[in-house]
Image 1 (cartoon, rainbow, N blue to C red):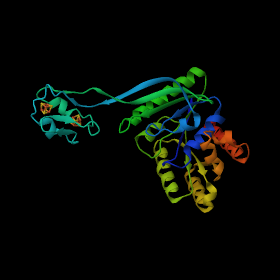
Image 2 (cartoon, rainbow, N blue to C red):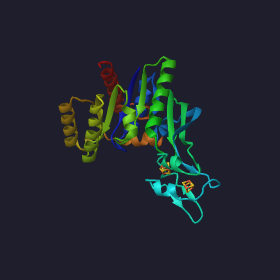
Image 3 (cartoon, helix red, strand yellow):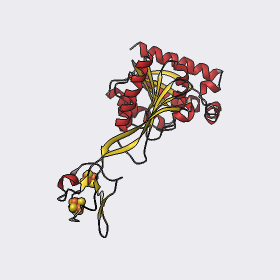
Image 4 (cartoon, protein in one colour):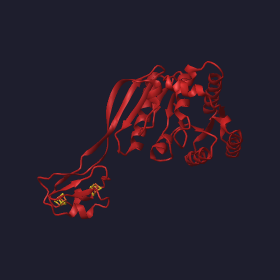
Length: 291
Ligand code: SF4
Ligand code: SF4
């Protein structure tokens, strides 16, 4: 079983457009949207939900006012200022509670319960290409890394059951917890970047992260023609690090038009853009198999 994760180190680099096109070209891969905080692959792939599941993770403190003796110990002990004192009660502010359990352990009246937290929903869906596993964390919820791990496990199970040997993942932006979980155990990280100073900065950050996990890196330079000089610099940087640049993709209005029409680029364009992405996908697969 192989896994490719497409990441960018930042939002807005074109990662989801590229993932959508590759989802069509892959033919025989389970798709997985690992951007659980702000998923958007569904906007292009229009998934039909086959099953929906609750995601429970972490715990939160809840004070039972009937048992609370209003001693204020929890208020004094909470290091996250998650206990609020009102005129006649103490309450937990759920968004500030870090689930450390200190208040639960020290409450003299045994007035604080510590139930699991319902953090979001995850789904198995069908799309016009293939099965897709995706999720949505509730606003302000954490534990996105655990949800990412769960999605990857479920996607692999489905791929095995279908006899596929590939899971294609749209990763989260940034270099935080969900991206680290996205990269765990993956075979190839495809980094989508663009020729801007911030694009290069974010490319380097996320590439270093991949190096730290010893994950093979490939790079796609999106909108390369917006700044050919910076694109050359990106390519030189990649050569110096041993990363394969699999594609220089041009800036083209058709990419936006495809999105507006809720199609992936390779459905919307039958000309040079499609050919470029077909070659990029073939090179990505060759790289994966040459490992
Ligand atoms: S420690 Fe327990 S009894 Fe004291 S204020 Fe907090 S919840 Fe109430
Ligand atoms: S579980 Fe920890 S963070 Fe949450 S309210 Fe209690 S002491 Fe504060």
